[in-house]
Amino acid sequence: MRFITIETERSGNVVINPANITSISHSSNQSVMLSLGGYEVIYTKFTDVEAAVDYIQRAPSVSLGLPLSGKHIPGGV
Image 1: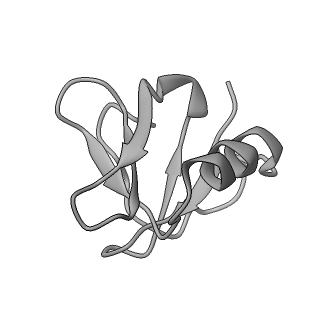
Image 2: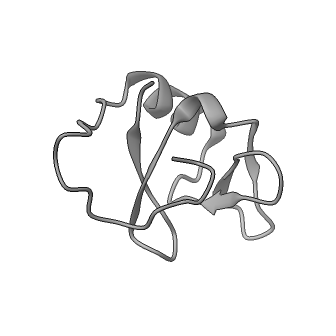
């Protein structure tokens, strides 16, 4: 299982399992949102869907052996 850090528009950084992402789209305010299935949505600081996809594919993994700073996403981590 792999975890990456995403910078959100409102809540700082979150750590997610990218395998849980079900869709990537623009929100009504033109930021990019990640849907994690169900009703879980992360509003990111990305403004371009292609840049978000590229980052998610290339992002370094977060080690689970280190304390995680940021918000825990229930069901997403």
